[in-house]
Image 1 (cartoon, rainbow, N blue to C red):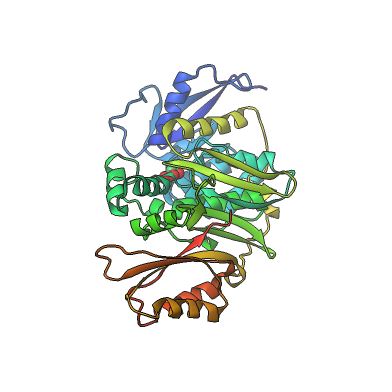
Image 2 (image 1 turned 60 degrees about the horizontal axis):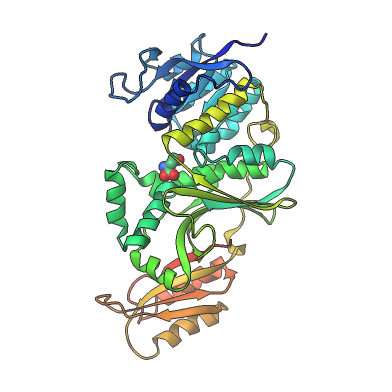
Length: 429
Ligand code: HSE
């Protein structure tokens, strides 16, 4: 029998949870299949915290697991966060009781998504997470639903707004990383402990999920190669610009050589390229399908309104009884994640050195690269006041990444090289 309304339990009343409470209050007409969604119970760390929305009309649960298990809750929405602990316990409880689960928790899905998908499909209930990747910009449904008729080879983009905001501000106002980060924390853009964002882990959770959706493999966060933006210096941003590039934190998942490469690292994108032109806290994503070709989307990756709209889209899927596998294919048939050997990856690089100002230094550097078989594409020497030496920066043509890394080690050992060289990859976009 059709429901007259769906009773929603919301665990977690932070930015996204608050956004969802407000969304459902503002949209009494939100009833994609005729029935309405009504929040009946909520749970959060503190009941009495000052909030700019009213939770007085909902039953309060100290324990999110009890909320998930409550017989009056039809759909459980998990907005607590974290791969382990109460979020995982509550999601498992709801799925085992045959309740649809909606979550914005990328750490949980990237880490335990394969097991949770088996659980959801065994109990024949949806497990949905549109809000976990790119906030309000629909990337999950695009891959899981719209692209399922194609074979996707590459998914790559900017998946962390905090990092993109920091990089944009550093370049636009010639500010240091530490300075912009401190301001972002003061303004509440970045978490008090920003490691998840600036260390690249948040973007890695998201690209791990997108890889599973794009390639039909089990999500495997442990296999992601991760480097954040915390070592990016203003000097690199300026030199990259002089060479015609902008530094971005790029997350990519590429199907190659019978395996999948999932990585997050700073990379140089050519000025004018959509990734280079994605500014501030925006997110952006390329998807390349064999038949469809290249798709580009860009939009807000965070924020109460956009992310709550993504949760609402999942609520709509539950209410319309839409049913898909959790990832690209049935959970029990997902291929195991097979990584790609880094030694076989080809790429171009940016290498920045601080050297003594004396004859023969440039010759020694280019000789080391020539011996390794790495060809130089461009070369720039720049006098910078108080640098304690002369910065030189070069870009290479495409070479095996392992060969470039080995050459950089040899350059580091040259007597005229004053500090550890800085190597950044040039985005393959
Ligand atoms: N912390 C994330 C970001 C938003 O900065 O993009 C939530 O996923």
